[in-house]
Image 1 (cartoon, rainbow, N blue to C red):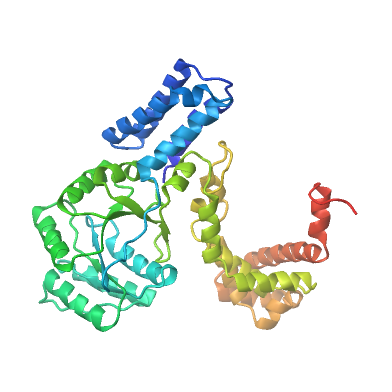
Image 2 (cartoon, rainbow, N blue to C red):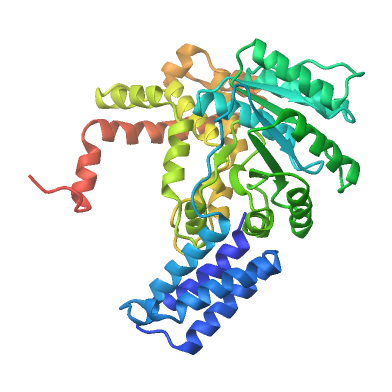
Length: 449
C-alpha cells in the first residue's frame, strides 16, 4: 500500500531537503506536487483540499522562514499533517462495558469482515488478554457462517452455533446469552454484506446495533477498493454510529487513497490494518508511524514489534549459545533459521518499515527472497534422517537421490542446499571464534587492544 504515493512524496521531500532557503515559488511548487500525488492515489477531493490548505498555511508562515533547514521543516509539516489526516493519536478498542463487550463488524461483501473477525479474536486473546467469542449473523450466505466457524477453530476461540431458521437478531441474542454463560469478555459479531449498498442491509445493521448496544462498531473496508470504498464509508458512517475502521488487504497493490480518506469521511479512527491472509496478520494502526512510512522515513518501532512477535526468542538464544560454545551449525539449525524466515511473512511489508534510501525499491529486494525456495529447502531437510541432519558429510550419492525423491525435487537442489549449509557453517564458526569482534574492529566499530 502507498507505493506510488510514497515514491511521489519522497521525490517532493528530496527536492526540498537540500535547499538552504525556501521561496514562495518553491513552496507553491511543492504543494502543487503533493496535491497531484494525493489525487493520483485516489484520496477523496475534500480530504486533499483540507490537507493541502493546512500544509500551505504552515509552510508559508514563520515556522519555515525562521528555520535554518526549511526543506526539512516542510517535510516535517507534511508528515504531521498526514498523521493528522490519518487520525492523529493511536486509537484503542473500547472495553468499558459490562461483559461481554460487543464488537459489531459492518462492511460490504468481499471487504474481508469474516477473516477480520477471526483476526480480532486471536489478537484480543494474545495481545489484550481477553476471552473472545465469534458469531456469524450472515444468514444469507451459509458458506460465510461455515467459514467463520472454521476460522474460529484455527484461532482456538469459541464459536456460537446457528440454525437455518434463525434470524440475525435471534442469533445475536443467543450469542449474548452464550457469551454471558461462558464468562466471555468480548463477543465479535460478523454481519452480512452486499456487493453494493442497499437500504435493507443498513436497516438490518441499525436494528442489530440497537439490540446489541455494541462497545465498538467497526467498519471493515478493502483498502484496494478505491473511491467506491470511500463512498461506502460515507453511507455506513451516515447510517451507523461507527467507532472505528479496519483497513483490510493493506499488503496488496493499493494506492492508499482509502486510508487517507476514510478517517475524515466517517469521523471514525482507523484502529487496525489487515496485512495478509493469515489470521495472525493484523496490526494496530499508528497514524504517526504510517505518515513516516508514506514519506519513506520508515517505521522501525512497528518493525521491532513485528519481529518480537514472530521470532522464537528461546530458539534464537539456543542457537546463539551453541555458536558461542563452538558447536557445529548442523542442518537442523539451518532448518530452524529457514522456518523463522518463513514465519516473518510479508517481506516487502517489513522492508517498507525500514528508512531505505529513495532509490531503493522494497518490492525488488523482497522479490529476491523467494518463499517458495525457502519451503523447498525445508522440504529437503525434512526428507533427511536425524543422523544425516547432524552429519551432512555422510550424505553420499545414493542418499542424495533418496532425499531428492522424498522432497519431490532434483539432486541438484540437494547439492545446492548442502553447499549453502557449508557456507553458513563456516560463517557461524568464525562468529563463534570471535570473528564478529575482529570484523567490527576491522570496520572501526571496536577499539583495537
